Length: 350
Image (tube, rainbow, N blue to C red; front, side, top):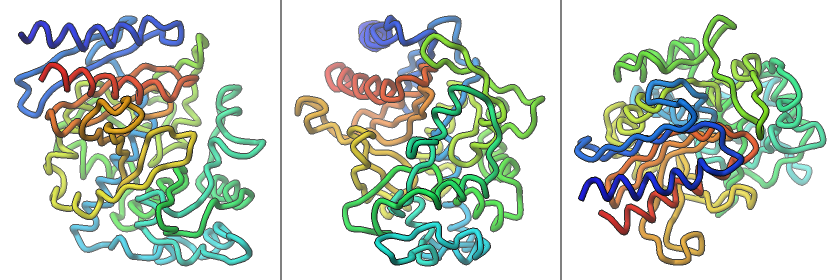
């Protein structure tokens, strides 16, 4: 029976990787106990092959925030002006003539309910176009300056509203550094990598650190400066093997008390460009009972995906974790579609 189960997952993965868009990939599926486990590589990718976590890094940042919360070093209701220079924040959020910059809270950032714009995808000088063309470094203050040139989408905590923007987690990264007294790299090591025994997961700090190449269509691009600039919102490197260890720990309560999910599981649908994705307190949620599955799905996926094709999701009703990477910047929605397909398969065979 297990052979049939693995064949079903393999069939879905093969369908996605046979696309002209995908040049290499890795899939790792496992339940909590490891009793069911399946791995499939494509294009020489293996469980130990490094890849860019991209926005899955946000789960690491969320973890640090939750640990600092447990240590009483911050609260979700704290205004971020408590942690950041007032001059950096000034004019970062002006909506319909009113300034909300000093009213923004840690919760607004974690839940993507600040209304702040996304410099990565918005504006005529959006960063994604530049990343495709060249490598460059972006300092936090430069990113904030770019945010100030764009219009927020709504006032903070607007009921039912969420807008996905990297700046929310860039700021959270600054807060982690301030309240932990550590660099973000050292905070990740202390709170996550060392407790979990991760030796191949890291936040690169200099050009000597290995930074995997990524694909944009069929073009290989190497962007070490930009990856190192991405920090708390998208700069980490990992392997499928270690990402599985982390995602299990994140939802399993190994790093922080998982009772906090009672406070984090309030979800708002993100902007239309993010498809079916909702956002909770520091992680994505994809409800599977609606149109996205032709009303044939059950439950939800929780976790995160990244713009370069990475994914790490938990499917609670079947106790299955799906992690891996499709390494394709030109098709950021593919890992979401793939994970939904895995959930649909799991419904039929488990």
